[in-house]
Image 1 (cartoon, rainbow, N blue to C red):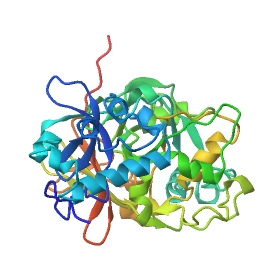
Image 2: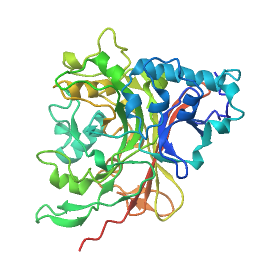
Image 3: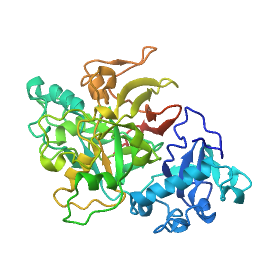
Image 4: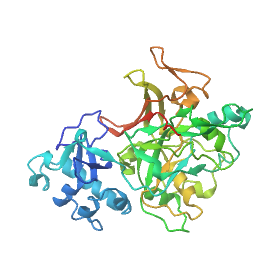
Length: 426
């Protein structure tokens, strides 16, 4: 299958096999739903006017795709998502498609990505961040509790998570200020207040919830599969020193809530389907509600290549920090969602769930500077005598990710953020 409407390079993240959703605007126009193809954004409301989705029962395409967020489309469920995807692929690949005969050129239904502004893809009602990488949890545990007590007793029995701050989730490209807060650099002295001195990135991915479940109605593994709309890249910025002082006994708070960056394009689970892999062996075997059933695909992991680069403020060049993969994640996406809802918690359309830092078995796959510098003990060389243990002011972090197919990619674009100096307080 090949896109004939616009040219798409083989190395493009946005092939005809991808077709991720986002929310964009041009000039003074209101934000609306778009789909990425190559270097372009398809205007979904314009395609709706051409009647491309007219025969899809239960979809008021003109209304849904004119919205400034994807929430309403997310509520409609996988059968409708799949029909829209099929119609788009037919339109893009078939030069004789009836809807193609209604336009003179691609410019009538598409605009260059370089000419648009991207927005958050959904109104995020709630945001939860998990801690699903065994390698990351083990590394952090070794630093602070020693090798023999690296993992807490509950970690291999359930997907650990905490409730984050939805209001602080920002779209890629949004700069963030270094947070102020309490920290205790000298354990023998009282805490001090000021800018974080140990600011870090966390390489994560996140998924958006589609159809909601009612309060009091848990989900099964099969139901969870059908309720995950798609995925984005995520940087869960972390102030390690603020977090270390505050997190006992209730977990992260101000060390996390100052900002979380996500990429603008939501890659659907249907686009990721060809890249399913087996997740790591789970030992001990999870409790029954977290196990794969005979009707669910046993391959609960996904082969998604992930890279993190830093552009230090001293240079204009990016330097590779992390090369990892989502397939290393111990707890799967569906296990995270099932566990979240097992007590009857209502998961709503547009809710965001982060995976936690995605670290792998080798040092180059460590998903944070905390691990790469081993809590600041081993400076990271970035060339030209530039070193880092943690992020400095005006440094930029870029996360990228893609699945590699046979001659095509299904990619996520970029998740970029720059750290500005802390706000000065009187």
